[in-house]
Image 1 (cartoon, rainbow, N blue to C red):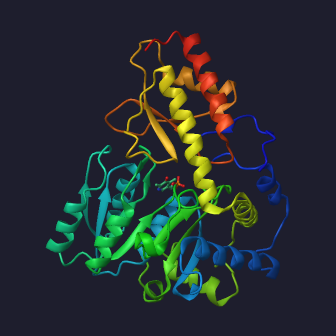
Image 2 (cartoon, rainbow, N blue to C red; image 1 turned 30 degrees about the vertical axis):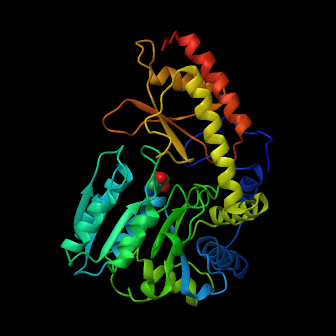
Image 3 (cartoon, rainbow, N blue to C red; image 1 turned 90 degrees about the horizontal axis):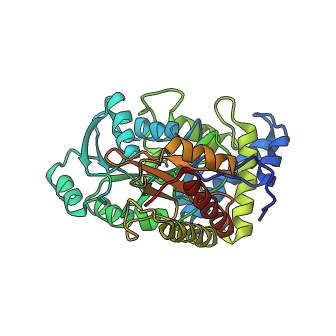
Length: 376
Ligand SMILES: *Cc1c(COP(=O)(O)O)cnc(C)c1O
């Protein structure tokens, strides 16, 4: 692990996040999109993603991976727009801004869409999921977010996946902010399509997203896409049949950094070890914040180790912008809130950060609230 700090501040944000110097240095190499060296890197990334996302390593042919340019949302849009046939119907389980975004994307693409909408602080209601699926045979696909980055809530993906599979539907999982940081597999989550991106828990830099897919399901989707640039099948087919080639100009530097980030994930001890570190980061941070008087939006039972929402202190002296700026000048960038009905800010615990960094952060926050005159 590289702890030598050579950046102006640590990003305690859920992407882009703090990366190692070695990940950033791997972008000094230049590659051609057409070159065999580069395409070999792409193929090795695809293979490693399938290995990370499946428990049945002995049988790698059941799953496959596709990389898609753009931020994570572009990959969500690519999946929603490409794997649901024109007569299909989507159920979105929505308890936060990222769930809502899936619905927005689906409706703009004219996908027949229904939603199970819940409050942002409520976990997915399993009974209602089962009822909606049993009551509406037209629903062909179900989409949900694993870690709702809006609040930091971890949704019960395995229980939902079990219901979706038992009732014979296709399951699309937005595991954007959790894949690589929380142990999971296609088998245990029941996902047919698992979506994540380069700049979250794998600790690469932003520029592309990826999908690990059930191979048979993806192979059946040829010609279904509602977009050319975001055609998931076409992108996959090009990579699969042309040795890792992208259809259009690919983000070569980002891909190079991502390959390095995958090496570093392995060196750290894999996803289990990274999860342990993120849990330690999050627990250290929350313990310190609670000792100062801050309250978390969610109870510990619903909370992920990825990002935590804190209520603003109930004090006229607290102004988020001043708080943010004072922390930034002390070397820490935090995240504004995104919850609709409460005044919150968020602190991420992912990236190349350690529990000691969290202790340092809490120390600086203590100074800043004193300086601002905030009382709890
Ligand atoms: C980060 C994130 C996304 C994608 O966001 P982009 O800004 O497009 O990269 C989607 N879903 C979840 C849950 C996320 O955390």
